[in-house]
Length: 484
Image 1 (spheres, rainbow, N blue to C red):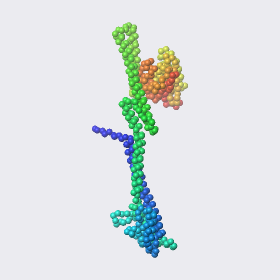
Image 2: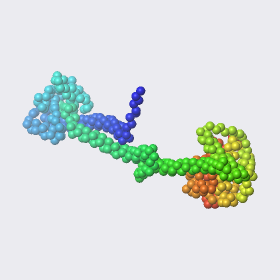
Image 3: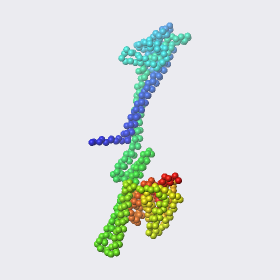
């Protein structure tokens, strides 16, 4: 069955698309609010201006005995007053007397105000209420009305009212404002898109470079170049970590090839030696006691080869987790003393001194005694091999540190070079001074560290210099011993 792969999109496309959608939604909401606010502001502004205009007309209108004296001078004053107030369109001006009879209207062709609207405008105090105009026509308009009272300047008697009507379509005429809003929205959208595109590209470019470098490493090319002058901390950390990882992988790849050649050589050497010795005996090149000596050497080489193969098999089995440890509660300090003493006694004619400093109290732990003894023997063997010409001093120090048993094994040997210290726990790694002096696979420290981890402990190089080396093993105490 054909399976459609999930299509991946670039970081730039992902963020710019989502940002633009969010930006347009936000700008659309802002535009709606802005348009509504502009509309209401223009209505309020024009109503206030119309109210002011009505007041000016009311001060100048000549009403006598419920009639208006329409003179040319009044019409000029009315036209000038409307012009000075800068209304965009000519308003509807009604002048009515106290009996609500329309005495004057301008323009002349506008319909008279219905009685219900006239009564409501005169009696009401709302200027923001709109009324339907021209209901009989197909095009319906709405009018806002304001009024001002005409009074007798001598008696303060109400003579009539000046009513001004403003068309909604005209007072909210806002082509300029609408164009400004549209230009502003489009400008903000383009600016926002440009900013997010630039920022996304700035962030995504180093990530793309890392992805390309990862492909090169996958193809076996570890010589990668990455630009690390990046201001963003997270991206800078990513690039630097990747560069360090690639450098480490390059070192490990070189080390792997070197170690594989070394392991092959270590396994091949005894085989070649055994083959040559047996062939000499078979061809009767040597006879008698010399032939017996050749066979003894062959057996010795065979035993050494068997030990290396067993070490390799044990290491692989332990790595795969197929070896179960047989833990038991023991006095770890006493067991370490016993193992170190037995190791020292078994050494042929030792030319060095061994000093064991035991803890001041029993230290009980749940461990596999055979595996812990294997770690101790391996550390002591390494300490002895580091001594120049087999002479010097080895110190074993056992102590308690809070909830752990701590074992320090110190020697006065030649030390481990600084450039080799980060590799000593790599499997099959052997230092330069061991390659030509001591035969082996280089699994001792790796295997010992695996055993320590299996006991929830740790094995590490504490310090090393030309004056000697200290390895430290920590193992957790048993639960009942921790509370003491």
